[in-house]
Image 1 (spheres, rainbow, N blue to C red):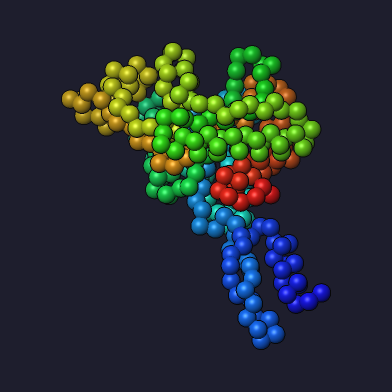
Image 2: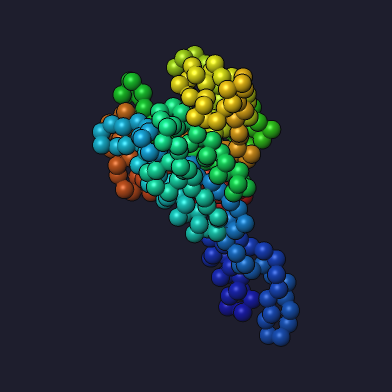
Length: 288
């Protein structure tokens, strides 16, 4: 094997690195070639948002607490992406809320402040993508599988939809490889989302900025004074993430089989690998 072929073979074997144009000096001659200079995702910033925190555990059943499961999977995704060169920021790295919440803020008010903190963290990081990690729950325990949400109400809606589709496809593929016959669902638009009270509002961490009236805040259980709204102010303007984003619902904790999968170490790794593959593909790198 010639020296040039040895170099090119080594380059081809290192799939975890990106290829950039450079110069390789062989036998005193200068030869134009491709060589490995940095990780495939070098220069890319990914914000992972493990849903729920603090006194808000999220869904809980069959020994699985969503707050803890979300964080565990997010940390696994971070490890995989960092190995490929990405800069990864977690909105929280413990069971505590991302930022200190005033002691007088409780319940929905604390969650409202918490969610704004997550948006602020993503924007401060100047992230390329934002991925919020959750698991689902439903009164009918036979419902199972995963979902990915995006919003059509942003200028980068098409990118968000593609990110959502690639992430849920990655998770589906990883779980199918483990023998779990998950039913693939198309990415869903949260502009069609209607909450329990019948309000059609986008998910907070995905949707656009909007003016929320004092009356709506009170109706939702938010204390305007604790949030910092002046007594004379009729409304409050929310912040919004400024990059493509998706919210993933990874299996249904309310389903005993899905919950068992979420407690299984190899399955958690498979889910994390699927999410990481989806993000990598969105950013122009191959799946692992």
